[in-house]
Each structure stands twice: as structure tokens, then as C-alpha cells.
Length: 377
Image (cartoon, rainbow, N blue to C red):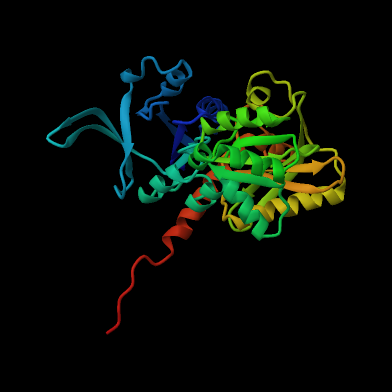
């Protein structure tokens, strides 16, 4: 007796500074997924926001998308039974789309890093389309993505975070001197300047003096309207992976050792100058604290499916700081998330199986809630 294969739609690319990281992650997932269990449909989003599909659309986006018009356009329809991915030729005649084809999709696997992919936007679309999807929902995704809001929630749960100062770009343009003075008054230099809603260290810089601070703010403002400035801590970077819905599990810990001042985009994906040490050389008490805080942070913002939680281990005091939580962690060949699970006994292909199962489990939970009620007279 043969079991029917499940149809998985992998959604990748996107209008984000992390577009290329998404392509690399997608390539790694395609190399690891079990094709005896799944039929894979590729759904690519160009840097201009065009949705395309086709067996070679990842190849095309990796080449820069010069021939993207040769691929079928597509969209996701809400409440369309199981025929959810629609191919069309892009022409609109008398307000009707010339539909070419439908595809039945059982689960969507978003591998979209950063803006419009990891911030709750695509999750909201998939909720409206009534599709199961891998990863956190709208709430967990949006809070995990926004570094400022995430720190606020961590503080409310009495989880330690590095001292910081945050502001909006529009206010900075009107009151730059006042904001710079406020930062220098509250935080000791050096500091990190970060766009609130980007990952992969895009747009992040370190400032050792006032001029570098102003320059770093200007750079961060190019990437986001909300800016976070954090005190630089002399610390080791420790990370763990979390997997699950209401009863999540946590992996062994890993450490990132970078030869640069911090683990920036180039160190992560270009120069390979950073070393990933698994397992991290920390005490059992430190490991226990990291794992417990990771699970608490995960539950605090209502994550599901997966996340990577990053910590700073202070070299001076030995204190642990919750740094960030990434709801769609990298899946590249050098990414911590799958490597940590591999070190914990879960191979990449099995990890993908579990994530798909968790997506279906959460869809059942969503469908179990009441969506209407009768008013009694």
C-alpha cells in the first residue's frame, strides 16, 4: 500500500535585505527534504515583490532574476478548498485573471528572513488563506522580529536584557541632537546601533565615539523606521535551538566565535571568518540556565514550530543576557539552527519532517476554536 505524498509549498526570497540568505536557506532545505514523502512546489518572491513559481524559479532568483518574466506568476487564494496556489499569466481582462493552473498544497514552509517574511506579514496572509504553515503565528513572528518590543516583553517576564535606548526615525530627524545626547547620557560607549526589524546583522554597526554613533544611526535609518541602541557587552555569543508548539524542546548550546568586532553579515555568510563551536564550552549550570530562559522566552511571545534564541554570556560578571529570538532561523549549510539539532540527535531531514508535523498540529488547534456565536434572546 502506497502512502500519498504530501504537497509542500516552499516560500522564499522576498522584499528584504535578507533575500540572498533566504535563497541559501531554501537551497539547503531542498537538498535535505525527503522526496519519498513530499512533492515540493517552489514559490519565489522577487526583490520587487513579484510572486513566481516553477521548478527552476530558485535558480532564476539565484542568478539575479533577469529572466523572471519567463516564469508563471502566482498568488494564494483565501478559502479556496485545497486549491490554494493559483498560476496565472498576469493579464487582467474585465477584472478577471486568466488562470492557468491550480496546485493543491498541504503545508506552506516559509523560508523568508526579515521584513515581510518573518515579521507576521506572510503569516497573516497564510492564516487568511486557511493554510497550515511552518513556524510561529502572527503574534510570535511580529514580536520576535521587533527587537525593541521583544526586549520589552522579556523585561516583563523578568528575563535579563542588555541596557538600551530606542527611538523612531521620524523623531530622530527632528530631534537628532537631543536623542544623541540621551544615548550618551544613558549608555556607556561602545554601543551597537541596530534596525529594530532586520536579522542577519544587516544594518548593524558599532560605535566607539559620538561621530561613529551618528554615522551608525544614519545607516540603521536606511533599513528601518525604528532604531535600537544597545550597550556593547564584553561577552561570548551562545545560541540554542527550540522546536515544538505548546511543549517545546531545546537543543544543546552552541557558541559563535568571530574574528571581527561582532558577528556581522559578512562574517556570517561571506568571509566564513566566524567559528561555530558545538557544543559550547559552558558549565552545566550555565547550559541549564540558557535552556530554561530560551523556553521561557519562546513561550512568552507565543512561538510555535521553531526558533533560535541567542544569548550573551558576560565575560566579566558571568551574567547571561537574552539577546534575540529568531522565529525563522537560517537553514544554510553554515547555520546554527539545524547544526544544533544535528548535535542533539535530530538530522536535517527529520527536522523538516517534525516542522511539517508541527504545522499540521497547530492548524488543527486553530480550527478547533469557535469563530461565531449565537446571541440568546
